[in-house]
Amino acid sequence: MTPRNLPLDDSSIAPRTSRRALIRALAVTPVAASLVNPAWGEALVRLHKEHDDETALLCRSREGRCLSRFRYHRAESFFQTLEAGILTTNDDVFYYSGIVAQLALSSYLLDIGFEDEWCARFIGLRVAKSLAYAEATGLGHDCPHLARLAAVLTPYWKWRQPRWNDPTPSSDGFTGDQVRPLLRALLDRVHEVTGHTRPNGWRRRLGGK
Image (cartoon, rainbow, N blue to C red; front, side, top):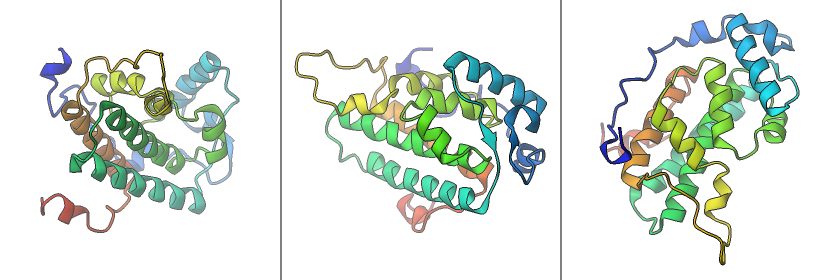
């Protein structure tokens, strides 16, 4: 399917996984991620080796939960700018899209116990890597179009850097009208899995829907 025929709802998205099923195996004290859940462990070990990352320790905490909620609300705030249609260039659209995606995925990773310092050191602004770690730990949002978009947005700062004579980064055929529903679906999935409340005024911004 070409980007021009991109549907608003991707039927390939995996069945919804309950929040209880996702976090049941997480212990109160820090443990190696490979010991938290056998399925997650195999996928994480593979990612660690592929990217030469240090082993992530997963430990859910009240602080992590609060930071996760803050990141989700920030993601919704930046998405509001995308929805408003006030961004006039593709560079700005993709830059803001990268912020939305990274904040949303960061919210999920923090909520299941990844440390913020680990994410900053080994993931940074690479949206595609955030998505890979999120899917490896049960996000359950297997959307091929989002994976393609994540590659376009990685790292998202490239859409704001002065290029002078350098070529414009490839958008892989995406337009703003195709990007927004993909990000909306991601935000909805993070909201569903983390259980975070919507930010104040969210329903009013959607016209009461």
